[in-house]
Image (cartoon, rainbow, N blue to C red; front, side, top):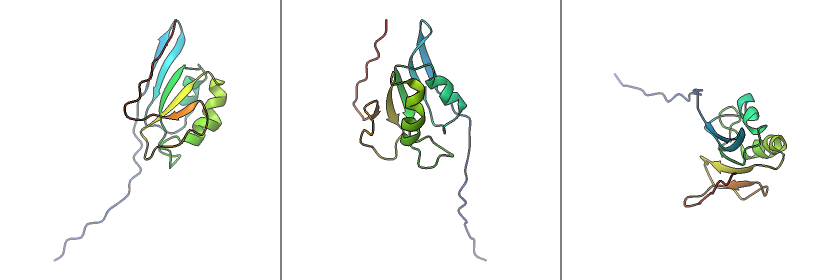
Length: 114
């Protein structure tokens, strides 16, 4: 008798978490973790955080949001008041917009607020 192993590709959707740092009701920093584009992301971005770290590994829009979604949907919501840094990337990208950058090892990002 021979044993056989079958590989099955699973689409696992789990609850993920991010966080927001506020000062005087202003969102200073947001980390949008491991998620696809959704209403909760839109709620955060309409508050116009100064800096957003976002997982942008979006090859599949059903799993992760993408760089294009950030440019097409996120920038209009934050009205050019937010600097976005792509994280959790399969590969680095060239800046496609002056307010969206690829975070790289060793980058130092300073958040200033009053």
